[in-house]
Image 1 (cartoon, one colour):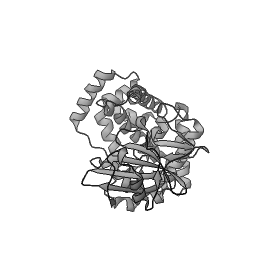
Image 2 (image 1 turned 90 degrees about the horizontal axis):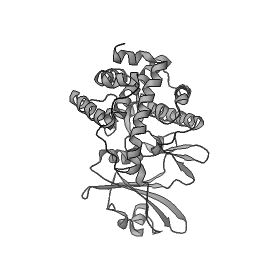
Image 3 (image 1 turned 60 degrees about the horizontal axis):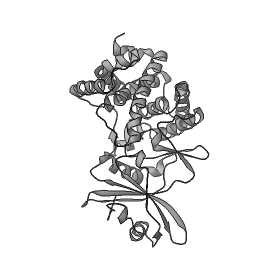
Image 4 (image 1 turned 120 degrees about the vertical axis):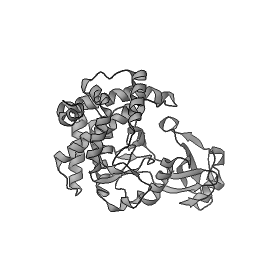
Length: 341
């Protein structure tokens, strides 16, 4: 990890600074802020640098107090070259520990469509995402090399104190009221048990490399449909189904959930991963239960800093409720175990 001067803001992104990072003299055009509605922990700036050839770059800035942001830099420096999926091209990165700032420099993506959590993807797009996610996970499936990287978040289990559940439940009910679907409401009421059962299952699942914040705002699509996975600040090590349920239950239409899961599983097997389908579906159920708690109780105290973010909260909760309702119709066993039916 390089230690060097890091811009405090856009005024410090100069020709001299960009040239120093690239290792050659360049001239840059106007620095443009981008992506204000698609992330809250960092700042993104688009820059054109030229020295005979124009290079379009993105500068990402953040405070080093954010562990998540530091993980993204480590990911690009240590793991990105081995990723079998499309990700931004890494150019440089560094930290200024004295001033508590860090930066990431990547190539700008051209001719792409920005994913949007408020707009569901088509079945074809969802299948492509599922297959690429399976290829990512198969690369590091049960890999010992990830265990050596202590900076990765360990997501095999999620520890929460009992008073967290009580306080968040009260906050949620006060802000949003009770859920209307019986199965979802029962899981909500038995969140402590759901969380414990999910942890028991996921703890023993083979770990792999997780994106960790897998949603449509963190994906762009090339003109040929290829998804580009962005924002690796939440990267971790754990059961791949934690990424999968975000895709299958949050990115597409209800009728596309099972096809997306099937596409992922088939690609996982084709990539050389040996796994039993029923055992894997049990981990899907466990991951859904754990994520449902994050999507509901986890949102109880969250107040989005932008108008767009605030407008997404209620639809997100409705989507979480629908995920439990629809999964319960086809896979009632794990949810019945939670609610005692």
